[in-house]
Image 1 (cartoon, protein in one colour):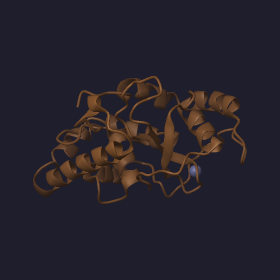
Image 2: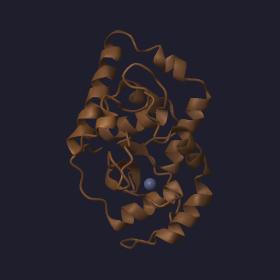
Image 3: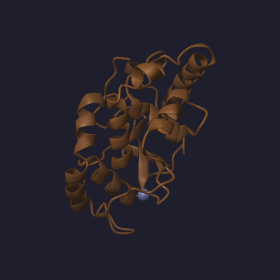
Length: 202
Ligand SMILES: [Zn+2]
């Protein structure tokens, strides 16, 4: 788990993330969580992309097995159950998680268009478990109560490596080959991107 400031990602990290996403990873500023094998699990992206677009999702779940497990969890209809937990201390903790997320992102760059907007439905709703699990993985247990709970419920664990061969050799970036392999393997992640990517209607 890693919150800012991040070490710069390596070329190999970028190649693996590109393979995981099935498209070239751009504006990556750090790897905020990793599989036990070292492969990126959560990727951090600049709050404002190089083309000027505001990007609220500081912590983005990139690992194909993790995204698939969280998509499956979302499909079970667990989100209303998780939202129902948002009372009392858990609601307070979720608000604190929202503020922590904003503080992390604003510490990198304050983007006026994103002022007060975090991710995943925080601080009062549960809209995207991918974003909440990514935050939980980056920040560590005890920061995001809904992300922590979703991670417990998901059929994926950061302690078990389920990485495919990303087609990226040790110490070398083979982005094109990796992207081709990843593109075939992570169709679920691409569909999820369409649903959640860049969503700012908190
Ligand atoms: Zn792994």
